[in-house]
Amino acid sequence: MGGGEQAARFLDAAIGLLERVRDEEAANIAAAGRAIADTVAEGGRLFAFGAGHSSLAAQDAVYRAGGLAVMNLLAVPGTVGVDVTPAPLGSALEHVHGLAAAVLDAGPARSGDVLLVVSLSGRNALPVEMALSARARGLKVIGMTSAAYASATKSRHASGTHLRDHCDIVLDSKIAVGDAELTSEGVDAPFAPASTVVTSALMQATVAAAVGELAARGLRPPLLRSGNADGGREWNDRVMTENADRIFYRR
Image (cartoon, rainbow, N blue to C red):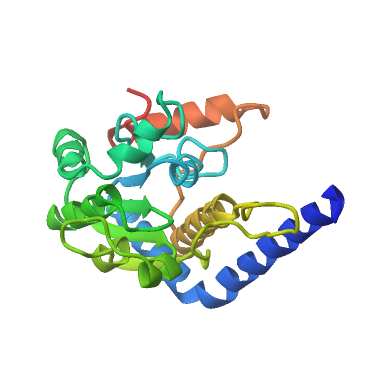
């Protein structure tokens, strides 16, 4: 099977997952949107966290054209993306107990805020502890994870629990264990992961739901525009000035 056929197979698989998320997670996405809208309307702040490749979906919602200006990245040093050297160190840090609690204690998140925790497997100590500790501090936690992983894998957290066990709202990405959509004769391992595509779509769908909810309440969502569009930078300066007490990536 040629490269073009494999590419089409992957795109079909990704579309199928997105359709499942659209149809099966609609109620949970709407609930997450309402939770975010409630927090924004009440003057609260929004945070997104993910480790490794799961951080990509979290980063995609922060300082983003068309996104909410008050969404902040809750970063754990060494775990954001694959910029740490050696790269496996980032994965190792996800297994460290106590790290998430220390980050929350040192950071700006407070009771009444919303934290979106992205973790495909939801089994490692870091995302489990992040959700558990955030809820203990009075934050509302929205988890983006795979129900398949939680059902088929053993937790690596001391409690024996997964991310989904410590969330107020859970969004299931529908990704199968292994996160690779394709197999092919002559290829030794599954390939073509779709978790970033699907989880980023879940993130943006949730933000869209929040924007719609705010507008329905007669409130103006604090949205950013593209800095590469005429007037975009001036618009963003105004929005970020108006919401300066809820934005931490500009300081």
